[in-house]
Length: 189
Image 1 (cartoon, rainbow, N blue to C red):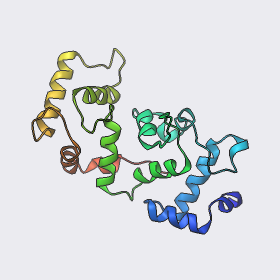
Image 2 (tube, rainbow, N blue to C red):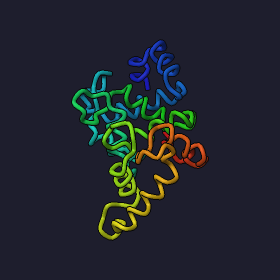
Image 3 (cartoon, rainbow, N blue to C red):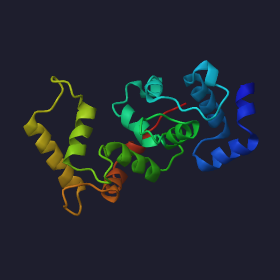
């Protein structure tokens, strides 16, 4: 961990701690995990971006049905390729930590589920969400009738203003009534 400490100054470590829900120890561990994802020749730089394909190999994400959306939501890459910088990686781990607030978790969950990034969950987003959860294989896919019924039920329960979509505040309202959501929206380092 000696080389970790040399790249993360006390000031930078303190700044990361102030900006995230992570402890200093968790940040140092995250830094080690991030460096493991880097090619050997790039491990001494903090400027490198880890490609999404490499991030998706992490055991914590491997079986997550939203793994690609998670990378896209947390990536600040101008290329919109889902690659993560170290600070993106910290943001990702911070949101999924036990210490993150329910409001932060629900905000990011909403962004992950908003597949077209238009600020609302419409029918298409909800269909993709359901397919991610049930699997999009022929044997697990819902019939059109089942899907329409489920999406109708979701909108009936969530769409308070009855505009045919679920906005962030409506989503947070529904999530606030689901106490197990926060505990299930986490990744442990």
